[in-house]
Length: 447
Ligand code: HEM
Ligand code: HEM
Ligand SMILES: [Fe+2]
Image (cartoon, rainbow, N blue to C red; front, side, top):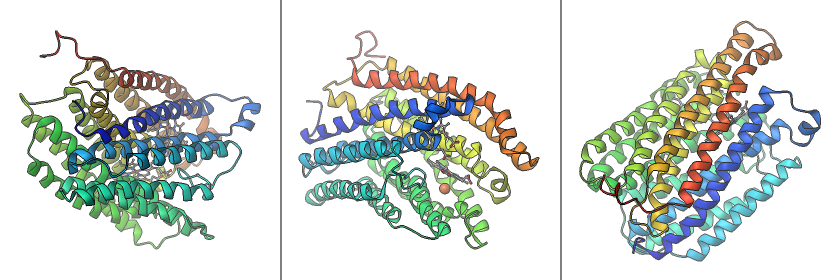
């Protein structure tokens, strides 16, 4: 039997839904790029304005990444606690609730029903359903761990990250009449998610996968986990200040935010060092070359996207010019992709074959998909970056008008639309491959 615990099966529908939403997200991204590159007919813009499609694109991203994390957690926890899930039924109820809420929110956006906070546009009443879904999830995972009483550092960091993630969402619930205060707490969700809670979840899931595929001892992985997590929390929490430059917060945030966020790449570099460490360890015992490729690619692109592209605009004298420009968007794409899209895909490639009852599988299409996606995303990031530098220079250094800058950027958005189509082909390849995994061909099996 390939699956260690029958209840791990609940992960499957989470992965399938996540993958379909991923395709949809990228299609909408191409629409967004086209709105910059070409003049869309007014009739279309009236039905689907940029603000609406942007909300659909980003909310789909957040939704599918979270569903992926949840499915991965449901897959990992039984093996880690050596016990079946507390309630598989609750896991299915939770999925139905969250997907239903997602569909309602996305439909609502089209009709102008939105809270208006970027990435968290989901209308207020629906927030309570999200909180309900999160509570069911934490209850299910928490009860499984409590009953098993087999605590490990990996499990603890995962649960810690998930609780942190859910608690920060609560700051998105109140209505703040003062716009400065609204933005202040908005960052508690956005920043403390991607540079705090999600990093804990990512570190725990990666540590677990590395133990599984390289056979590296638990103590080695968990020793690093302590160091990384401590540093992530330390730099990530104080680093929130790099978003307070513009919203009317006291001046000391300029140097607090600048200093601590500049240190944020340190734990990410450690993660990369960590990955190299395992590469040396792996000889003769690597159990899943493709999963390892995804893990290494993730460590590198996480550093590139969050570390390099993040550092590039985090210091106040630079952010003064680049704030809210396409430079920010370039960073948003490569950071989300490197850190969290690849994390999910790494986990899917580990778990999917087992969920389908395959002991080993043909990794060729998946390897192609990895390179295709990563290179297309790097190309997109460069296109966004060139557009961003042009925008910053024309608008903010030369002081010319918004549309003068847009005219200079158009060419790069046309390139972006083409690269987006390329990325879409890679996403479709990935999804088709994951859903139709085949046993390894005999000739390659021993390679
Ligand atoms: C995986 C981790 C990360 C992800 C997914 C991520 C994602 C994002 C996104 C989507 C935004 C745009 C938010 C918006 O205005 O709508 C943003 C902004 C920003 N990020 Fe990150 N980020 C990550 C890590 C980092 C790190 C480590 C740094 C610093 C070293 C950093 C520096 C910044 C700065 C300075 C901004 C604000 C840009 C502006 O003023 O327009 N990020 N990030
Ligand atoms: C893995 C794939 C993708 C990820 C992770 C992703 C992520 C994001 C994020 C986080 C934002 C918000 C940016 C910010 O506020 O700074 C965004 C906006 C956007 N995305 Fe994507 N996206 C993906 C695919 C695409 C594709 C394929 C295209 C088109 C070629 C695209 C085009 C855009 C555009 C044009 C925006 C709006 C930027 C703006 O507000 O000016 N995205 N995406
Ligand atoms: Fe941040």
